[in-house]
Length: 126
Image (cartoon, rainbow, N blue to C red; front, side):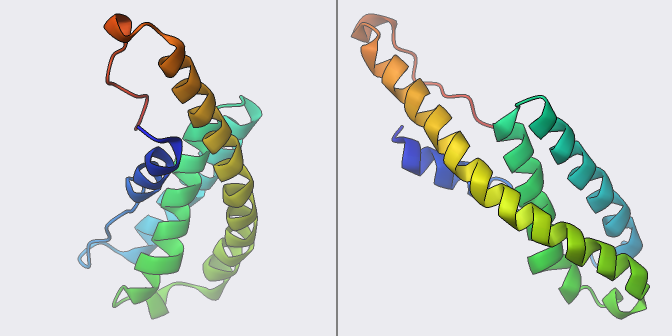
């Protein structure tokens, strides 16, 4: 698969869903864990995993949780923490997209150099 298309598919796979019957604070707690996990993946140079977690975090707090009917009940201190982390997450996600695209391009080139008979049509994708 073309590396650009693969990255787009990878990004799309990170979209999360929010259930209206779950307290939004649960999403804030999960988001904190996602954010910390992404930083851990960055430290370990596991860039695709880090990007995946950051994209889920961004999807959760930019697109989904603010539309939750009980969003207004979340303490401002929690919202402030998320806003601060979102700034970091957005910057890191942009940086990581470039790195992951480079990784995908390298993997694609390696795949192309294999003899046709030994190529497998599977790619590493979450």
